[in-house]
Image (cartoon, rainbow, N blue to C red):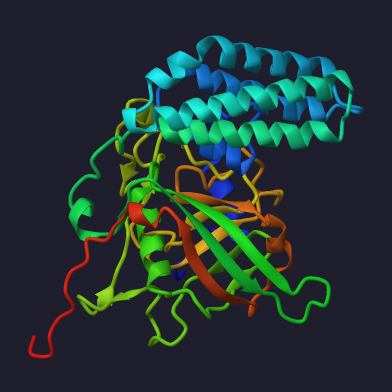
Length: 379
């Protein structure tokens, strides 16, 4: 098949032909499905204190699912978080780069204030305000954690370190879409976070193409209840599935790129070129899993791991074939980001709808282009 996610009947066939994958994968009992939480988990820093605050505040989501809200659980989580912020702020600041220490001190001060307000909300049993205050606190936690990342943690291996764009950090993208023939939902703007810490080449390739305005005006090319996909050039000759690099006159391809949790914990580079299964990594979990609705990944030819180019897809995770932690896409396709706002637009997007534009609104400075000069006419 041409570049594309393993979709439709192919998924069922893959389950039949690979029954051992889900049996051997060491699946998580309660996988994280929130995009922002997954991105927090993927930040490479070492500070157990703020991680404890993060986990405590995220656990409130479970208490919110209890009818009427489990206020005792919320109270315990807020109390634990406030205690850490009051007693261990200096430990957190000490692990911050000198140029950002004052910034982190302010964030911690603001977080302490929000947590005190949170205690008042819990005391009043105001269940409508609980999720709002939870997100305010988690937003500050994210800022603190981002500031704790002092440097890009590893070297991208050759030849990809010099031949392809790479994103050494994160970038935020706004994708404006037009949904046609829909009076209720004419479209809107998706906010996407690209994760170069865990997929620098995939995220860098995508960021580079966005800056080249490659996707502007392109249509949605697949929407089947499993994925929403685009990125195939629409005015190229038959057989061209991706971006043609003007420096070579050939299709620019990127390798399969997946960060295992074991490598992440050691500040090592992702796995390249081979799937987890091909490497015998049956129990390994990716740092960026296909858990969230709107997971962003590179499309490729099923039988060619390194055939990704410009085509991408958003996974509609709620498909019965892809329950979180049990799908056969993890470890086989390169995830490099998540939609964090307006994911619901995906439900109405169909073939022929238009990508008005994509813009990098934050983090563009993290892109290392590695561009070669275009060939001259005499070459």
